[in-house]
Length: 290
Image (tube, rainbow, N blue to C red; front, top):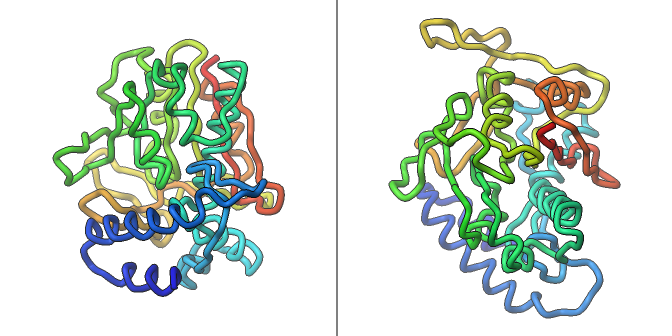
């Protein structure tokens, strides 16, 4: 039944309506599964972890990105394996687990899930920038009094616009900067990392995900911007989907490889990884401002 409803709402053209209907469906499922006992819990919503899966990587994207069958499967699971109680994909659940690990390191004790974490007095004192929507995690983060949420070229008047290459925030303003699968869409990776470093307090961290094929390949710039603002395509363009912005397809400027952590370290961060035990595409970077 849940799979049938999900397929139906994904076919709608009005994405805001899709989002509202999906939230209703997830709320119903959470009332059903949220209190069921069990050791496996969703790190986002805290409910008993029950999953639904649908493949999301198109043949065209897999071919253009040079994915073999194994890595296509990894990314399908990363994006298409979702919690039926909150809609969190494996990528978002890994991001939530990394956030809980960050809490444990900074507070001295960790919460069981982000739903619980955001209600702690410690979390309520945090200054947090969510530079783009972190999927199902955003609904929980929105409870933080110190959250500044933004999207690039948002068409929602209630959501501020921020450009990672030129953030409007003050120096050393935030304890934590969150973003998820965003850096591959910026035309200047070094500048984006420097901007994130700039707005973090000393000792602050950015916790984020990027899609990486970890098969020995190095980071590749598929496109860049010329001085006149036009895009210089070095390879045939590929796009990833989105939700809040005026367009729902975003050009990929970078395809990240195994050297991605080295690039983050070179920007002035101390880096840790949270890796999934069975899916090498589902890992999160925790980068502390040195």
